[in-house]
Length: 506
Image (tube, rainbow, N blue to C red; front, side, top):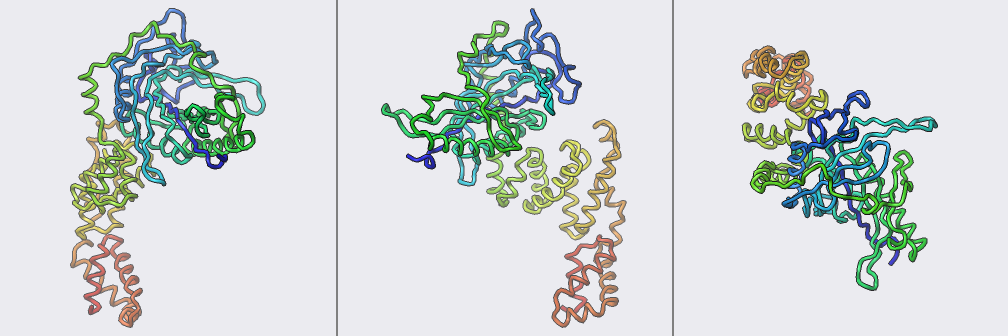
C-alpha cells in the first residue's frame, strides 16, 4: 500500500461557548468587552473553601444540542475534575464530564461536493472554559492572562473518525455552527473565541495480523478558530502524514510513535509540534466532590425534544420540495432561522415563493448586511406582513421596483434615527404604508398617468420611435428609460412597456 492511497481518518473535537448570561458554576457575567480580569469572583478564581453551583440554563442548552444531534440522553451524567497546570487555569483543574457525559451516540448529516455524509457523534458534554493567555509581541519574553473567560459554559462535541477529507472537516464545522446558532445554543462568534476546533488526523494503513486496523500516528491540531484554518490545517496534516509514511513505512505508525499535539501557523500555512499527546490517566480524573450528578427527568427530556425546531437541512429540503425553490435559494434562506421564518410568512402571504425568495435575498439580506442589525431590530420596523404588502404593490403594478427600494430605504433611515428602547420604538414606528404615502406615489402609478408620460416620451423622441419601427428593438429600452426618468422611477416598467407597445401601434 502506497502513501498516496492511504485513507485519511479524522475526528473532530469542537468547543463552543453556550449562550448563557452567567458562568457555569458562579454568578459572574459572561461578556466579551469587559476590562481584563473584571468579571471574576472567588469561585471562578479557585479560592480556597468556595463551592460551585451548576448553571441550569447551560444544562438545558447542552441537552437541546445533544437532542438535535440525535444523541441519547443517559439517566445520569457525572461531573469530574480534570487536573492540569496552566497559567490560565487558576484552580489547576477543570470541571468537566469524563466517562458519563450528558449526550452519547448521535450523528450529524452533512452535504459535501461528493454527496451526503453522516458523521457519528461519540459524545456531547459540558465543562468550563479556561482563561485567555496573550503572549508578548515583538520579541518580548512574557505573557499576560485575562481570567474573564474562566468558567464560561463550554460544550464539547466529539465526533467519530468518520471525516475523510479537509473539505468534509470544514463542512462538518460549518454545519455544527449553523445548527447551534439555529437552536440559540451559541452565538458561535469565532472572532470572540466562542467556537474552536481541534481535529485529530491519521491515515489508515490497513489491518495488522490480528485483523485490527492500523494507523499512522494521531496528530491533534489545537485551537483552530476559522473554517478556513480547519480546511487548510487538515489538508496540510494529511499531506505531511503521507510524506512521513513514505519515508518510513515501518516506523511511522501509531503503535510506535503514539499521539502528538500540534499548533497551526496560519500565516505560514504549517503545523508545528507542541508536545506528545496526554492520555486520560495523565489528567488524574476523579468525580467532582462538590457537585451532585445530573439526573435528567425523562418527562423533561421528552418536553425538551418537542422544543427542538425543524433543523436546517430538513428545512432546506422542504423548501426545495414544497416551495419549488432552487437549491441555492433554499440554502441561503435556511442558513439563518430568523430569515427562514421571515421568508415563510412573506411566501405564504404572496403565494409566490420564488418572488418572495428573490425579495428576501436581495433586499432583506442586503439591509441586514449594510446595517449589521440584529434580526429583531429589522423586523421591528419592517415586519414580514408589511414587507409582503410592499411586494404585492410591485406585483400589481402600483409601484415600481425602484420606488419600493426607496420606500425601504426611507423606512430604514427613519429607524436609524430612533435610539429608544424596543418598547418605545414600537410606539413611534411608522407602517410601510405611511412611507408609501409620503412619496406621493398615487400621482404616477395609475394607468392614466403612465399613458400621459408615454405620449410625451413618444412625441419628444422621434429618432427612437423611428429606430424601433425600423426593427431596432433596443430603441424600446431608450423609450422605457425616458418614461421611468420622467416618473422619477415610480412607474411600473412592465405597464410602461405595454402602453408603449400600444402607442407605437404594436
